[in-house]
Image 1 (cartoon, rainbow, N blue to C red):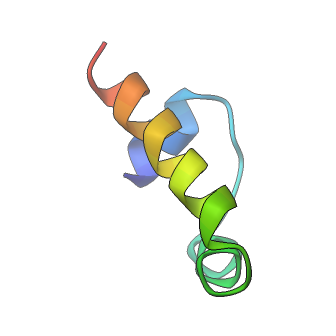
Image 2 (image 1 turned 90 degrees about the vertical axis):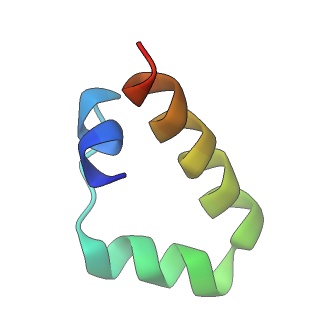
Length: 41
């Protein structure tokens, strides 16, 4: 997951991702989709 985020050019650490997951589940779901797309290339 982290690798997919990095491949997409998004620079976030685990703490930032956890804050997004807790406070904005929709945005986190969007990040998951971006990571999936990058990892499936």
